[in-house]
Length: 302
Ligand SMILES: [Zn+2]
Image 1 (cartoon, protein in one colour):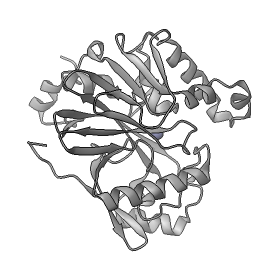
Image 2: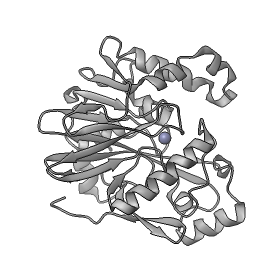
Image 3: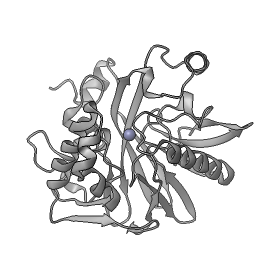
């Protein structure tokens, strides 16, 4: 029996349990599926004052010598449709990432049962699992929804040639991944577009030109999936003015982050994010002129 078999892992009481967690919004169920995490150098947060960053890492018990970029994906089950939201590093995953396939299996979700694939933006930690190991569409029956700004940006030759050397492969990954869904792709062209009943696009441009989350509502309940508004929670809730080096428009990314933190803390809205520590559900609390994240409590009924 494979070591990744969930029943086997639970029997041996060793290794981590499957990275799966469920959350309810009315009659809609969101299942967080862990892709894992990737270690990154501190330089990924260029504005960070090293002394302050170390102090925050100590305060929040985060690693002090590197950054851990957590990667969460989500499956949203509405009464009629099943939506996969982003795909992690998938087959490109190494070490502690690329776990979506085994965690989908642990959650009892067959990739063939996904009706809609929603891609928030074109970075490889969101798109690489769009392809199966053999290069075919990882979600063979899914219709792809992606913002038109992303397709324009990652499809632009001039943009690709201007990109830093280490980002050039990202353009190629994006193009191959999207090409596998040719003929069944819908380009998102506006804020508020309803993908399926209860799920509306929330444009959050800045991190990338088409970076978009989802507003999820059912039965009087609401939830916001904000994808990459925060990458490192121990740094960016206290210092929302610190961006990441791969923000396409750094000033706009900071502006959108500040606006979102203000909005969801004022509205007391539950949020989820790709890079919040798994499973990534919780609330944002205002603390002076900064913010803090309060992880959601475990709840069998949630
Ligand atoms: Zn990301």
